[in-house]
Image (cartoon, rainbow, N blue to C red; front, side, top):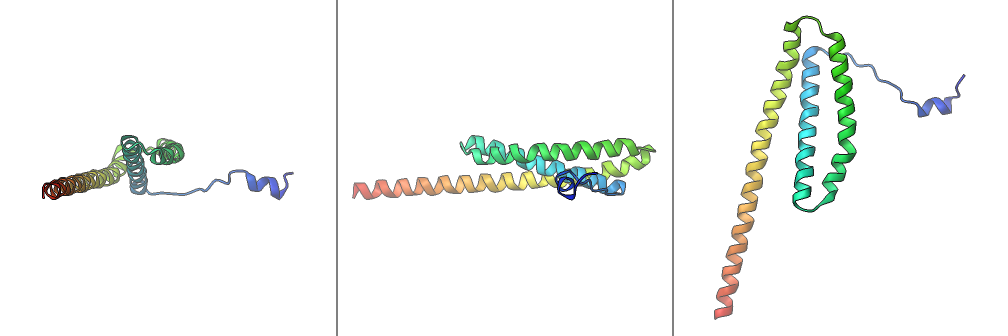
Length: 133
């Protein structure tokens, strides 16, 4: 018999029952987070900031493990193709929202970069005028 102290250190599974639509939403949500983490990691590399890479390295394996478990449960519960379509529909809704978010954040990032650069150009021009006077 195990003692309560050793049982506390073992993983205690949580059993959740989802409707097929909820599985699609969960898969899409995990995909969204993985995509956002990838973007953060890439941005960190571009800016030579390893903090974002470390966040990615910490969270990505956990999310991949969750995806594997959800996909395994999905495969084991597959029945009729029309029921699987509910999963795909819910997943697609989240994926489309993620794509819209990517476009929005890309536009915001570009706008900020352009504004910052224009401010820099204006400051350089002002400094050059000040030196000539």
